[in-house]
Structure formats: structure tokens, C-alpha cells
Length: 261
Image (cartoon, rainbow, N blue to C red; front, side, top):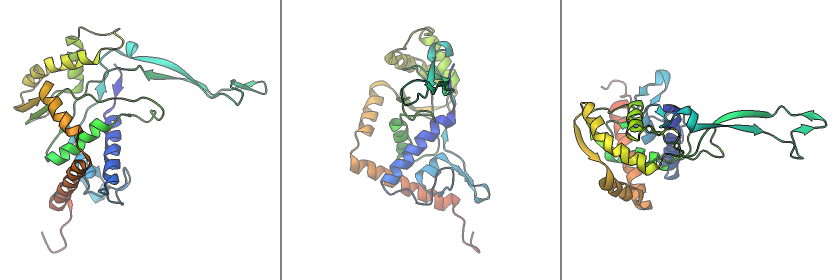
């Protein structure tokens, strides 16, 4: 299978979230991704940070490497890349160019089943993370001119523990679809329907207590309401998330003044 490493998933989502916070003036100027963490914005509190001797915060977002639903052979193709000269050819003054190469590309509409676990988040901070997932469409460092992806949410699970891995989910989904290798592309509606069929069984095998499972019509109603928020509602949610992140910072991260505990 083709792998989509977990850092290739979380980094674009974080950058999208930070862009949104910056748009609403909720991102401290000194907070620079991978350089200097402010330790108090929603991004730092939810996704974590590490500053050497300056402290660290464990991420409250648990992600895992995702695997393509179909096998490597049927999910990728090799493209030839070149850089022609001014006249459109690969030779100049009688000399051939070495600026030609080959690169693997994932075929369109390949599905990467994946789950994400959020832990100890308030509703507003969860909404911030969900917004990042919904809005992110470009993953990886080589997708500057193409490679758009769409995240389709099949379910939201509220439970008291982390649920199954991406690989287990992909394997069961692969079996439920009747081993779809060679089907190009696998219909998205079939994959989502199969996921809804196998999710209750996988959750039961995880030995977690499930408080609520949103799928089907209930999930669509929730997502429609979430994605239809107007500017004022979105701003209010992000303001609340920023306030709650700052409260967390003051309670668990900020150093107490000398002489006080």
C-alpha cells in the first residue's frame, strides 16, 4: 500500500489552522511554526510543542500513518518530468539536457482511510481541529501545483479511549469492499457505506466505552450546521478557543513568579 505519514497529515492542518487564527488576530506575533512556540495559542495547546529547556506540551491530537485502500501497483503511476529550453526541446546548441527525471504519483481518487483521536479538548478547541480537517486540501511538500485531496468524514466517535489503528481500519474496509484492487477508482459512496457497516464491530472489539456515535443522517446534520457557520459564529468559536487555550496555559504551563507556588 501507499503510505501517507502522520506528519504529512498534521502539518498542513496545523498551518491551515494557524492561518485562520492569524486572520482573526488570534495568533501571537512571536509564535512561529517550528521555530518559536508561544505556548498559549490554540495551535500550541492542541497540537503540542517542544522548546528544549523551555518546556514542552504533549499533543492532544493523536494521528497515525494512513495507508491506501488499494495496493501500490493499482494506486500509482510514474510520470516523466522535464525542463525544456526556450524552443521547447530538450537540447540546446547540439547538447542534450540532463534535466529529465521520473517520479511516482498517486492516481486520482485513491482513498486513504484514516482516523484521528482528540483528547481532553473543550468543544471550541475540538471545533478548531475539526475546521482544520475540513478545510485542508493539500498534503505533502510536493503538492504546490496539484495533488488536491478531500477529507470525507465517515463518523465521529465519543469514547473513553483511543480506537482502532488506520491499518486495521483499512484492512477491514478492504475486505468489506470485496478486495477492490484493480477497481479504478473505488466509488467513494461505496467506501463510506462500507465504513459505516464495519465501524460498530471495530469499536466493540476495541473494548472502549462508546458514549455516542455519529454516522449517517445524524453526522450530516451536525456537519452541515458546523460548515454553514457564518463569519460571526466562526469568529466567536475561535475567540472562545483562544480564551480556553490561554486559561490552560495559565493553569498548567506558565511559570509561577519566584517566591510563589
